[in-house]
Length: 209
Image (cartoon, rainbow, N blue to C red; front, side, top):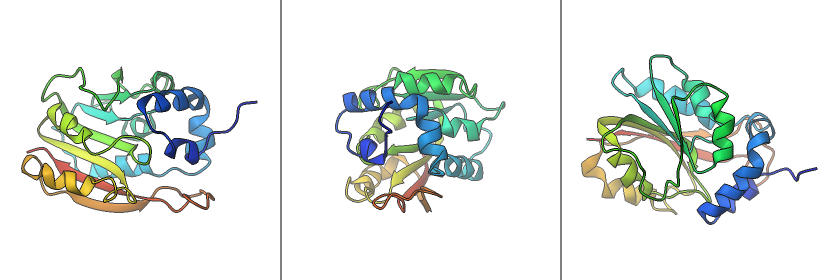
């Protein structure tokens, strides 16, 4: 019987190869033994704030670190094209069967993406800017592939906002973005983990100038 994966496994990742290996073995059970069991709130909150801030021009949407498609499920809107990008082919294979994405892109977000400049009307992301995953320098590439005026709605783990210099990055790119709006939320509705059950994320919202 496979060993159940936990947040400890996810937060201990060091390299893109670590991510590929973890999510390869976790993909099939991720939705049930992680998202559902812990009442993982970030995807539904991202969808809620996207709907709050978006307009009809914010399309197509790129779901960054889409995983099994939890954000896509909540954003599912026949009027908007949504693409998913993730390093894990196995996670994307789960997302495929949810029929909420127009395109699935397997890619390492820490490298240059094979996406044209100014292509997407918005970027959404839940659970990607966190412990052991990707850092703030990815913003540069995401801005490149986003249209002028494009909307960003992202979760950033609250404990990493300053520690990993997300705050400094937002200042560095301030001439290229509107002033961000921040909303702090609880990540889980039902997670007994003594170390991470009360984790919070900062939903960060801005537009590319």
